Amino acid sequence: MLDEPPDSRMKPEKVGIHRIAELAGVSIGTVDRALHGRSGINEETRSRVLEVAEQLGYAPNLAARALSMAKSSLRIGICVPREIHFFYDQLWQGVLDEAQRFSHLGIEFLCRPVKELGKGDAAVFSDLLHAEVNGLIVTPGNPVEMTPLIDRAESLGVRVICVSTDAPGSLRSTIVFAEPSLNGRMAGELLGKCLPANSCAAVITGMMETEDHRKKTEGFSDTFPNFCAGGKVIAVIEGRENEEQTYKKTLRLLSSEPCLAGLYVTTVNSLPVCRALKESQHAGRVKLVTTDLFPEMIPFFNDGTIAASIYQQPYEQGRTAVRVLVDHLAAKGPIPASNTLSPSVVLASALGQFREIMEPAAAPRLKIPKDGRWIGRLQSQLR
Image (cartoon, rainbow, N blue to C red; front, side, top):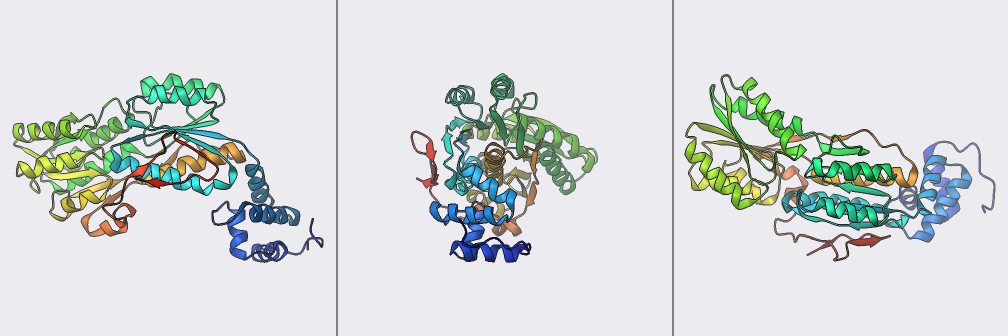
């Protein structure tokens, strides 16, 4: 209990925070961390600050929400690929960092990565559902296969968030992504504006059954001719997210289509395409627009092999998926119908502005513990 009754005149936020800090015997920064669920504060102090805030009537919704969340016992399952790691390491890092922010809540995260997109996710999803999770974050590589499983989960009251790619025919609660059709349209406009009239372009994608890959391809194919008079998309190559297969198919395309002037890679699997362009001496002559960003791409930007890339914010996708699900499950927050992040165009001159490039190129990859389980304080580990 407080030693004195709250002063009803203390309404402004600045005064309220100072009053809470004074009565709880902590700093203003500690009050801010406690009220907003941030790390860097022990649980005893957090509870004391929240109790003072509640008794003062300060920001009652926020304080009550945090107290309610602190008492919750929740289990969240995460089924996201590990490969291609250039993209999924960033997405996983966003998941881990955001989960770390909720370390004081005692939420159990069951992380069950699959090796590659669309391989084994149905079985892992089913296992997580049997583990009695309250919510699931999943990257559905094959939406036809995943839709009945997602529908079953939702019918049982398990909220499902799709991240990066969608299962649009399912009953999933929401999707977190950089809208793929827009990605494709941006790439189509870029190549269309930098190529002469009547140019031929092609698309290197992963799997057309994957919603993300299909919609990017369609967006590009619809847009490119609008910005390149007489331009045509002459081929769509499925690399199946396999580096060697993509490399060989790109070489074959370059040798069989001498008119080819532009390429768009819809996935992060751009390195084998760059290698094929350089080895066939087409680098720079065939304009290349890629997807996303990682340190190994820097030499290909600098030598002109890559003209531009469409950045999808994978780290923010991971963070947003966890935040939306935790807020709904623990604090009864609403789930938006979709959570769309804005893609952006990356040029060589702006490389240093992106988090993926600011990190050391030789940084070790993420390590997920063998049992894939964290309780309470979720640790982000590296190997």
